[in-house]
Length: 70
Image 1 (spheres, helix red, strand yellow):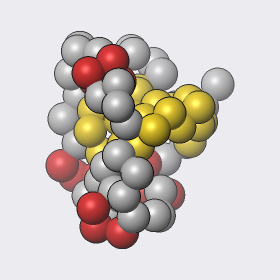
Image 2 (spheres, rainbow, N blue to C red):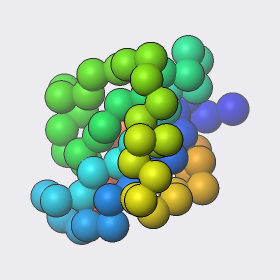
Image 3 (cartoon, rainbow, N blue to C red):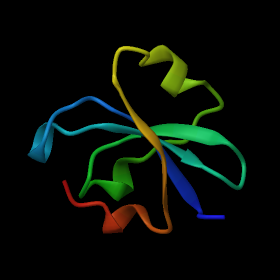
């Protein structure tokens, strides 16, 4: 199993792209902007559920958040 999953996406590209990501080891979620890994703050809240209007990213597996380029 991959370390992280991308759950949702706001539909924007470049510096305006924001994703809901999940740490698969503990199921915590965070909002994530590519290139800003140091800004990730993990919470126990269901952010994917709160961002229900965002596009589904099909739980895309990823090993390292710094590999996400959008």
